[in-house]
Image (tube, rainbow, N blue to C red; front, side, top):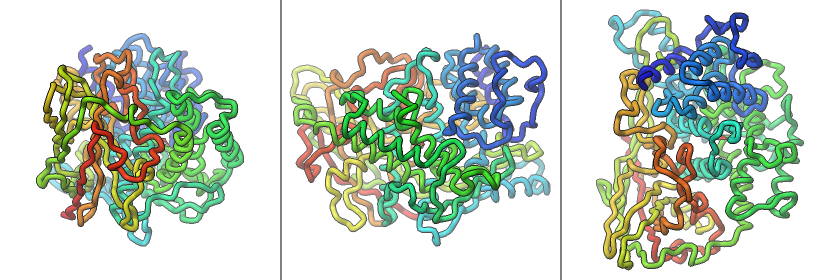
Amino acid sequence: MALLEKQKKLIDLFHHLSSTPMSEGSGDRGIDLDPRLQNLGQTPRRIVFSVFHEKQLKEATELYEAFIGARDFDDFYKLAQQARGFVNVELFAYSVSVAILHRDDCKGIQLPRIQEIFPDRFVPFETIYNGFRIVQSGAGKGNEPITIKIAHTGNVLDPEYKLAYYREDLGINGHHWHWHLVYPASWRSEVMGKKKDRKGELFFYMHQQMVARYDQERLAHGMQRMKPFHNWDEPMEGYAPHLTSLVDGQHYGVRPGGLKMSDVKDVDIQDMVRWRDRFMDAVNLGYRIDLDPETGIDVLGALVESSYDSINPAYYGSLHNWGHVIMASAHDPDGRYQENPGVMCDTSTALRDPIFYRWHKWMDDMFQNYKFTLPKYTKTQLSFPTVTVKNVTVNASIPNIITTFWKTAELEMSEGINFGKSRSVKCQYQHIDHEPFTYVIDVENSNFSTKQATVRIFMAAKHDELGNDIPLDEQRRLMIELDKFKVDLSPGKNSLKRASSDSSVIVKKELTIAELRAGKGSAKSSNEFCSCGWPEHLLIPRGNHRGMAFDLVVILTDWEEDKASNASSKCLCKDAVSYCGSMDEKYPDKKPMGFPFDRKIGINSLADFLTPNMKSTDIRLLFKDN
Ligand code: CUO
């Protein structure tokens, strides 16, 4: 079957998913149910699914394993059609997405964006309701597209509202959903026949980076960096998502300010306290665990999540996943009001909630606690003898000043939502974007032969909330990775140029469902990509009107030492390797993720830390409020 044909068939599996009937067609359990689906359908069909909830994830895992195990594409497709008819609608979307990303006969197929599959997880219901009203009234000419501006979700009486544009950004929430599809917590390598290299470490690192980015967005607004969640009795800030699930017709839970975490049906706060204590004993006392500097963080990442790879889930529990569930249930912990969970229940909505970042910063502190136990990097480990970085400039319209601004975008909602008539209904929203820029890096290679190097580019704010310099050991935790790539250095002088759009952390271009149906992005096209990665428009923080000061740091290391031993270059999906890895291959960089800022430095100024193979440059992020 041609790739485009497969692509179209798979897109149809998602079409108007939220309005599928209670059971449909051959999926009805009573009629010829495939034995591989016999145990499924336990999660009620029309409730909000939580990938963080142990029992729901178990069912989703059974389903994606059945999909991945299907004999061939036709077998997979038939199985998926049948499952679509009776399992939980959102659980189906999750499992079929995991399968599409991992089946060999789906290579080259682009997963439709979750924003288009379930717009109700991204767009306030006021906006969607407006769409219904306009369609039903028959306004406008014939089938001309309807475009509605997205509604606000609060106002400045809530200090956190200043950052709603960031937390509610469609791209970052879409990224988070996709990342957890590529790295399912329940992935069983030995059953699936594909190992997820350094999955636990990447769980730590990708989330650490999201937290670092958010803290710098706060500094740009003159706000304090987040206080990590730290106290089980602490009243939490509120959040009202303004979302209504079209799967069950209920709004997502609202958390008024001041609520605390409570026991839920399957787990107690006491369990959480105990699991956290056990983690700290493992890290600080080495109790019941042997952590090796190379793999320790990977073991701990898996243990905290907790993923299938956790070394002892019975003992260390599932701190992270249950935390999401408990926080999502704060407004109705024992379910007496039969409310929907809050947005923390799902990977495509959790980033909207301010508590997400505080929860993950708390876990990041736990991981850092482990990193503190590792020896500092020596000058030898940091150096690349014979290679000197002479100068770094960021070329934008003004050198070393990058401008950010608002940009208007649209989301087609009628692929996901059945408005009753076949008409395009779009919502229009604004997001932060930046001008394109280029790094120019002058490097001297004093060897007589060509050297291969890994170029690592990071950036972090220079000043804290009070305008004081941030000490390096604090600043290192704000370092966001902008890019990492391999270069050949000729003997003598080299001038390297690299465009911001080539970054190893971003997804290059995300196609709409209409574009996918039209055949754009099929494997035959030259720019194959697999849609995992941070959105390009948020590659850098917003900055401020004065031009917020950042240190941009470029580090060259020896590729011969960095390269993963058996990484091949066959894989189609390797765009955003820094955050997403290289699908079906080893993580391509052997160094710890975040190197050289992942460990304690013990030096106060960046200038004193740098070896000749590193260089820092002062840059400014200038926000122009258009
Ligand atoms: Cu990605 Cu808490 O895992 O969200």
